[in-house]
Image (cartoon, rainbow, N blue to C red; front, side, top):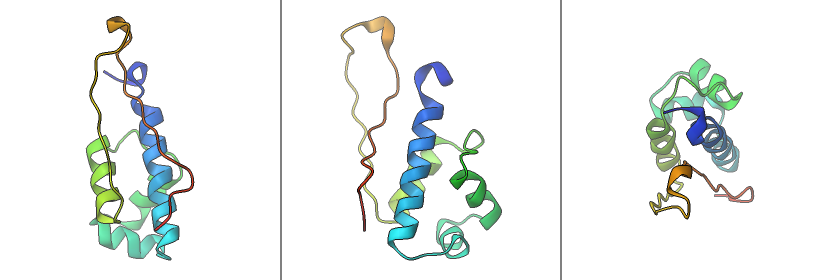
Length: 95
């Protein structure tokens, strides 16, 4: 299970939402990393789009820590052979 299911795109969208949450809260990368229980270099890599080494679960957990809600919806697609992960992250979400 990998890119063909939309994981990379979803990770990128969650990372962008993470950055928007950080900016909306007026936090630096160092402050944010500390709040998230990681280090600043790791957070910086994620914010620059290097997300393949971080799980969707971790990104969602980080968003929750920063006060964002995360919704997961499971449904049967019209074409069962086309199951995939899709994320919808509004661009204008602020604190």
